[in-house]
Image (cartoon, rainbow, N blue to C red):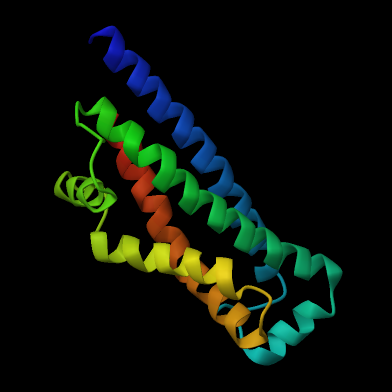
Length: 157
C-alpha cells in the first residue's frame, strides 16, 4: 500500500472516529429519553419534554448530533473514502453519492431523505412543535441507517 493510500486510509479512520462520536452521543441522548418516553413520541409526550429542562436538553442534543453526523459524513467521510478507493472527488456531489451506492455503502434515495431531514432542521427547528416532534421521530427512525453506513465503511477499510 502506497503512502497516499495510507494517508487516505488514516483520514477515513479519523472521519469515522468523529462520526462515531456524534452517533454515540446521539444514541446516549435517545437512551436517556427512552427511560421516560416511547418513540415515536406523541404531542402530549413532547409537551412533557418541554416542561423538563433535562429532557429538552436531550432533545436538543439529538437534533444537534444528528445534524453534525450528517454534515460530517457528507462533507468529510464520503470524500475521504472515495479518495482512499482511488476515486476522483472533483465532481458533482450526486456523482459521489452514485459511486458510494455502486460500491454498496449507501442508497442514494435514502441519503436524500437523511439530507432533506437535515435541511428541514436548519429551517424548521423550534418554529413549531409539530415539526420538532416529526424531526425527533424521523431521526429516531433514521439513526440506525447512519450507523449501518458507518459499519459498511469500517468493514471496507
